[in-house]
Image (cartoon, rainbow, N blue to C red; front, side, top):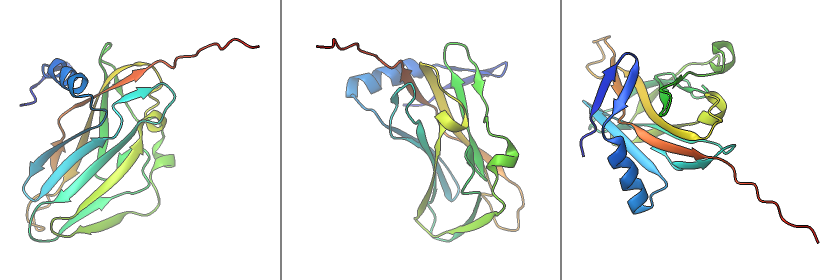
Amino acid sequence: MNNVIKQKSNSYTFYALLILSFQIAATNINAAETCTNCNWLSFGLSIPQTNIIVGDEILVSMICSNISDVEHNLSGLHADACGTGFGEYQIIEMTSGKKFECQISLNNRIPHSYSLNVLKPHIEQSFTNNLAYAYAITNAGSYIVQAAGQFRLHEPKNRQYSTLITPPILITISPKVITNTPSN
């Protein structure tokens, strides 16, 4: 299935969402992964739970895989609550089109150390974040989540960076059901 995205006035219209929603419901999948490939890198997004209850953690991971036969450098800030040194999440609430930004100030999210990792051939590295905490997603609704990253995808002498964006994943946050149990 091709993911078709149309950009208009800082909001996204996703034509494939209805199909994606039916696929998730029909196959009873509660997890999703997606990726995009460019040169030596496969850049992915993994969400182990796509159907979430209000108040639960919303764990997501950016995954970088070296799909080449040689080592490549990958820079990153491992302790960044909103993403990594090379990327952040793009989150849009479906009904309103509201785009969510990281709610943690730069002073509180960037660690004092910056690391350069060597990705060996055919090895992946995963970076996990909690969107409920970092992006303050606390209301019931449907949300589109994508990962966007900046990478040097060419020879080390070339200082140009390219932006990679994963295809979207739909998550649904349901209200918490409170039941009153009769007391004896």
